[in-house]
Amino acid sequence: MFPDFLDEDAETVAKGLLGCILTRELDGETLTVRIVETEAYDQLDPASHAFHGKSERTRAMFGPSGHAYIYLIYGTNLCMNVTAFEEGFGAGALIRAAEPMDARTAEVIERRRDGRHVKDCLNGPGKLCRSLGITMDLYGHDLRKPPLSLKTGALRPAERIEATERIGITKAKDRPRRFIIAGNPYLSR
Image: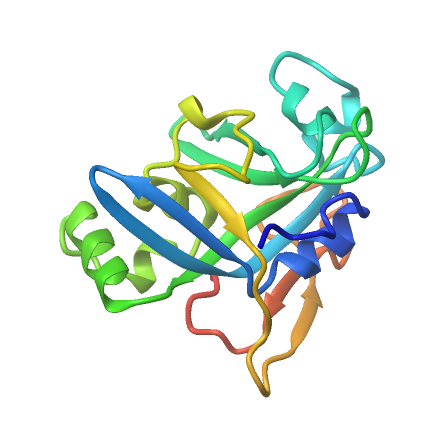
């Protein structure tokens, strides 16, 4: 079932995505991962791409919730946000890390990444996009549909969410808008 909380604010969405499932159909394979780390961004946040308003680059963030906002960082890595809140208000949750849901997914990801251990393939937003073959072709993609889809998930017994400072930014870094499943081995840094 598709998450029913994506029309909420970015922080609520970022927390709610923890435990949710991303499924990627790629080269005849179905890869399934569970989201374990996110960061919240919106147009009121100076660290957000949406802070300076809607542009060609950020138009997906201002669109309907539940779509992919994909962008290039450092000229080499792609990252993906799940868009959030109401259409017209730029908001989203960056997917920072995930864990494989099954051995087959882990095996395919390791093969795609030249034998790197799967944990080192999913523990950062750029690595995650590279490992799942998330490209700019999926910019604005409706995550209700293949080949990249999002499904409701849940925390496992004894799992808990922690909020921390965001990683890799300089503006508004101290805001606790990074959300993790505490102690998960697939977290970035």
